[in-house]
Length: 84
Image 1 (tube, rainbow, N blue to C red):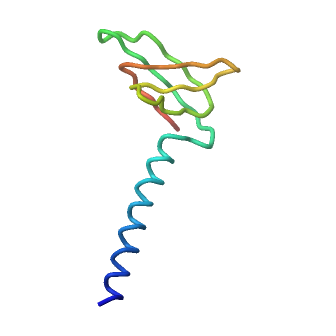
Image 2 (cartoon, helix red, strand yellow; image 1 turned 120 degrees about the horizontal axis):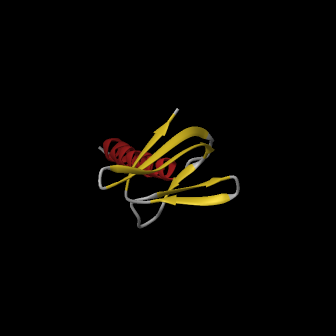
């Protein structure tokens, strides 16, 4: 009986860790990719950018941010982010 309880505790702890690690890896990217960002306002395209870099989620926001040629770009609102 003790084995079953111990295995259950270990399984629950490991599944919680997996969810937490997945959340962290989705919010912080560590390798560069090719991206295209298209931002919309009122159904019209208002911003398009293509770059190679790292995109991160903004905390407490609906947006993302990234650096392009030492310039910080922040995108928030209605946008599509494509990666290759």
